[in-house]
Image (cartoon, rainbow, N blue to C red; front, side):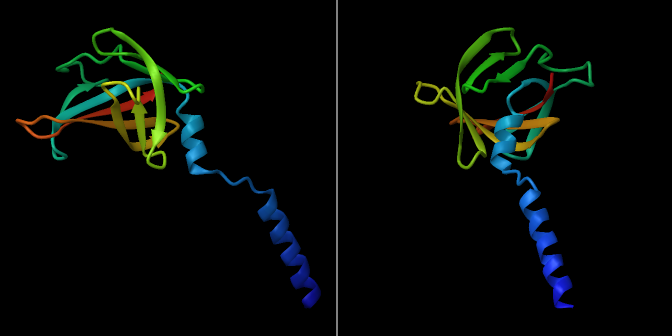
Amino acid sequence: MRKYSIYLLLICLTNFIACEVVNPANAIREGILITWKVSEVKIGIGETNLTTVYSIDDPKFIVDYASYRLTFNEDNTYFKIDEYGWNFQGIWEFALNDTKILFDKGIDITDIALILEFDSNNLVLQFEEENKKLGNMNRIFYFIPE
């Protein structure tokens, strides 16, 4: 009986060592390095008063985000084409245990995006802008791979 226990232990250890452990931070870092296009955009004041202003599935959009693209490069540069067709590029980095992305840190206007969701098919980013009259304005971008 003891002999079988040792064999079982060896098999378990071999399987444990052979398994590749995936670090969630590395998964985000590697998976984000593509070009993303917008599938939906919601804008609103606060967390609950959000209005869908663009959806890839609905031709009756308020703002046309069809040309919006966001590319993250391995050298921590990004390239963005906004909803008006303007091109932007700069530096990006993760912050707060890979739950936020800082765009152009150290420049006068640093955009901060909270990562609400990420997997290989979806990236959801929330940008918050301070508005002294209305309160904090949220823009939530739902991205899919291009």
